[in-house]
Image (tube, rainbow, N blue to C red; front, side, top):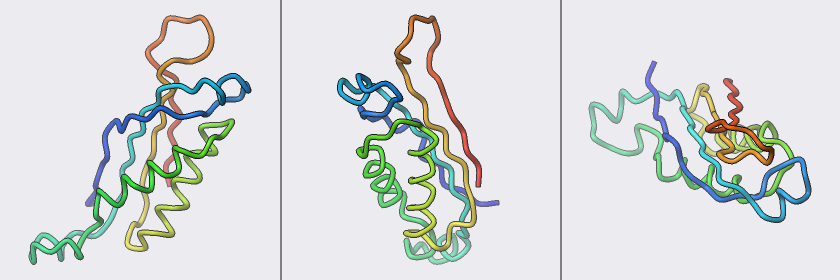
Length: 116
């Protein structure tokens, strides 16, 4: 299966259940993998035969800028935008990581992953 992956895109966004998180913000990483046909691009060397990963990044960036309480909600919005804006995408997987959870702990991140 052919795929394009945006690895560990970094954002400063305002997501969190606590109101304070939506005020002060936090650091996040997003990894998005989409499955799409690429045979035309492979044989023609033409961008129209694949998914433009710069445009895909713009979708992620736009949705990460909209504050939400839950990362699951952010992921759902990104998935729906990808499905709407890139009709050749047949599925994918998204992981959103909150790099500094707002509680005292020694961990690298909290991640959610959704496949579709």
